[in-house]
Image 1 (spheres, rainbow, N blue to C red):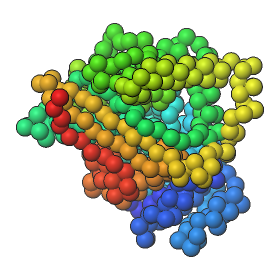
Image 2: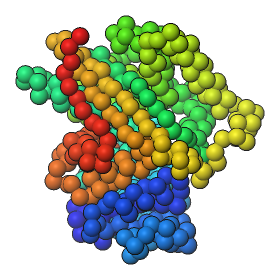
Image 3: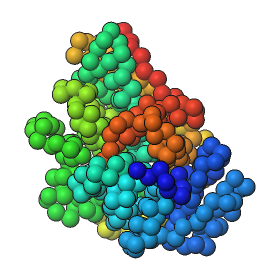
Amino acid sequence: MNADRDLDVVLFGASGFAGRLTAGYLAGHAPPGTRIGLAGRSLERMTAVRGELGERASAWPVLVADSADPASLAALAGAARVVVSAVGPYRHRGLALVEACASAGTDYADLSGEVLFMRESAGRYHDVAKGTGARIVHSCGFDSIPSDLGVLLTHQAAAADDGGTGELEDTTLVVTALRGGVSGGTLASAMGELNEVRSGPEQRRRAGDPYALSPDRAAEPATVRASDLVRPHYDRDLGIWVGPFVMAGVNTRVVRRSNALQGWAYGRRFRYREVTGFGAGPAAPALAVAVTGGLLALAAGLSFGPSRTVLGRFLPKPGEGPSEKTRRTGYFRMEVHARTPAGARYVSKVAARGDPGYAATAVMLGESALCLALDRDALPARVGVLTPATAMGAALAARLRAAGLTLTSERVTR
């Protein structure tokens, strides 16, 4: 529907921390001839960003658009096949752009890790996007591409093995290594979500529902555990000590939405969790307890005004983020452990070099944009408010492997 657009990809919010990194990635890796534009509130700032990107970006057009100006967003959506948004917090700045893209039949991708925003986006615009043929894809960064594609690859491996159905039961993502930093924009989104959760009991209930993003909540389990927070303990099945993973609350809900959008292809008995692995050595129990305590203390500190004010003096401000060295030397490694109803076991591995939330995320968001714009014949025949796995699936996995990420899955015996 949008093949006649002037541009293939427009990056909205290119002057922000994540936006600049994504713009840099596109300038260095988009195929020759890809029509890319930069968009934001300030013509001067967008022009300055373009000037930092080198010769390949020198002719990229600059578009002026503002989250508070629906007419400018409609013009933005009408100019491109794909709009990529790096403008958060999304709950307050993103819905108008989602509406513009869904209405115009324009594909959209962002970095949102805000459950309440994604829930409202799906509730309002899923049917609109289905009607126009748009793919609205949230969480196209470290949250939640490794989780979403890791489980999809596990399902596909199980389905291809001996004619299996691909159904999975107990499935656990284990973070085995992680090194990186945090930006002020990410913290602002997290604090905005906390504020909204605290605004009333209905919001708390929605945010706490493990199936909050399911398109058919009534078809999901009625009785679920109260939280995706995993207490520190020794996991006999994995053979290691585990504790909570800070992003599990977002990722698990995205993966569960993927299952439902695919007609519960992972199975009705699919149960998914995410943990941080601490190994089996003598220091593992203490480390698991210490990390858990630190995460709980940080969450508590960010939840209350006085402590948040104190923490704000030391944490990055919006527009600030990890240094170039931190981005370059960061990394992540994850494993998805799954069991099928027949008892077969699979392990999928997802890993990348570079700070997970920034260097690696710029790769993931950039390749998501290019996938939506350039690989349309290889994409699943699915439209609406989607997830990375259901919108792009194997096509995105192939792109990310070519970009240097590890994405593997195999059957194991033990």
